[in-house]
Amino acid sequence: MAEDGIDLVIRPSNGALENHLRLRDPKSDVDLGFLQDGLNDTARDDEVEPLSLGSVSYEPLWIFYRNKEPITRFSELAGKRLAIGREGSGTKLLATRLLTASGVTGENSKLQAIGRDEAAAQLLAGKVDAVFFIGEPDSPIVLQLAADKQVRILDLDQAAAVVRHFPYLHELHVPHGLIDIRRNLPAQDITLLATTTTLAARDTVHPALISLLMKAMHETHSEAGLLHSANEFPSTKDVDLEISPEAEHYYKSGPPLLQRYLPFWLATLVDRAALVLIPLLAALIPLLRAIPQIYNWRIRRRIYRWYGELNYLETQLRDKPADLEIPAVIRQLDSIEEKVQQAKLPLTFAEHAYVLKEHIDFVRRRILKPESKDKG
Image 1 (tube, rainbow, N blue to C red):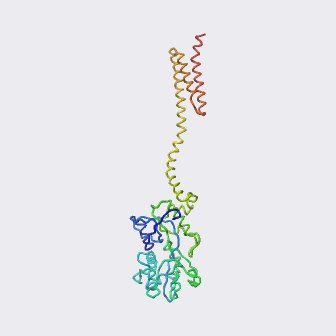
Image 2: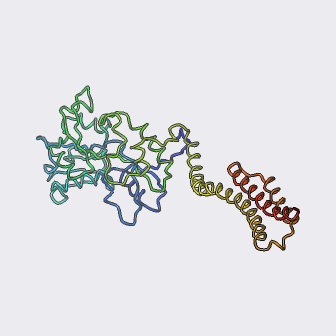
């Protein structure tokens, strides 16, 4: 973002759940936040609804346990001491939902809300039987626990069924050796559940910034990772939040046309100018169309005025021929003809001018005809 002159103020938090609450709080000054898909049903009606810009990565749920026999289902954790993540974390919320759906509750098991570092230490010390946490395959804590021979990774055989019950989750197949190729960790293929990390924004964030964020997301997260292929992210894998209209357009058509060829500041300036010019042009177009009509009307009005004067003289000639003063009428006809002659009329009205001159000459001949007979 800094390459385009945008400063981001990074606010630390306790995790996805707190980010979610900040974005929904009308009094918060946070504009963007990384969320964990699946948290939206914790919202209240009086809170602001953020918009999704899309998912940027998988967040696998790791369950490490101490047990002589392999565990493949959540229901098999009943009666054990379980560290399910610190209070207020997305891990705790997700673990609680999955365990409750499998019949594992605080009544038949010991659920402990502790952070993953402490949970890992207690698991290695034998003080808890299993730990839940979310993290990347190459994170130090995953490497540490995967390498310990007393600890196993829960290989979930009901993953396909679980994701049907929880649509925001994804089934991940982790090949053996993914965590550490040299030590072949894990020793066999395993199946995990994963949620996604979603970038969300308030609906007050300017559309131009949304487009810039989408560009940054694509540049940062489109490469292949240990758990996803190239160009798999960013994507619309999240199901919790409504997708931003600008983000949806980006996924369908790419960046806005102006931002493809212009620097961000210039594209934004042109875009803002267009917001002013387009309504102005919309108002001017009817006026521009009316200008030729108004001009033509004014020309016709001049011609019709001369026709009116000519028609008056002709009417006088017909109704009161005895009252006419021939020299005065001739002078009026000459005056009308001179006005027509000197008038600068468009070529499209030349025909009208010549016809008017013929009519003037016609009236002149009618006036002079009786005079000629008297002289004879």
